[in-house]
View (cartoon, rainbow, N blue to C red):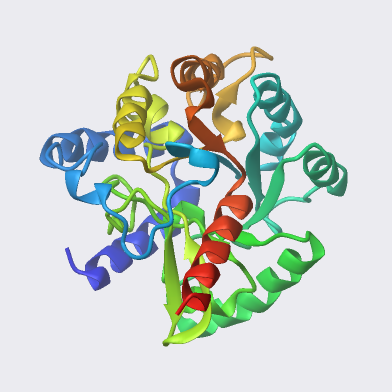
Length: 316
């Protein structure tokens, strides 16, 4: 499908979304996922061609075989209230991650941000309003980019992710970032489904200049797609893909949402799954691979890649 066709239907969806009950939204999206899962079985969840880096690749530091990068998009104030519990769960298992907040959709609590960063976690910016209109026009993007840069600076953040994984890698040069995480290796279920076909970080140049940023594509299916839309009752899809990425020496980058994780408080909604699915996956990685992988927040991954590029160019 053409970009114009996809853009048209994205606009229609976001216009109608506020009018549709949540159950109807999920039902309609579930039907699309069922059809696409059969249609794209040849390239999802694994696309064999994505096992190669797009450009220069230095290998992982300290002799590690592959990397594990954990990220969380916090879509609502409700999800924000779960961030510290999620961070505590990860800390107990020896992991660190990043939390991406939406600056002007809900009041982002400075106390939570500070507590996360003080404990070795990272904070990033997740769009501005989460309304599907960030890339509606160049003018809209430029207006919002100014505000996004304000929050990046105020939060001391270095990374960005667009809501709904919408992306325009050229326009993102307007943001004061060292990395973006708005793409994926292969994911036909996303509204803008053009994957970057690699399980490695890569450099996005700015018209041939030395300035640019690192792109960090996610490489495992998102939690909402897997557990809510596909109704999977375990994390076998994550394990299957993770084993393949480990074999290829790539980057396991997972994006989950505390908004959809059920921590056994109150009644579970139709948009939630047991947080134990995620916890068990982290235990699986720790148990099977022990010291073989490098776990770091995305900012550290990007900084390592930038330093490797600089070393390479300085040797010429």
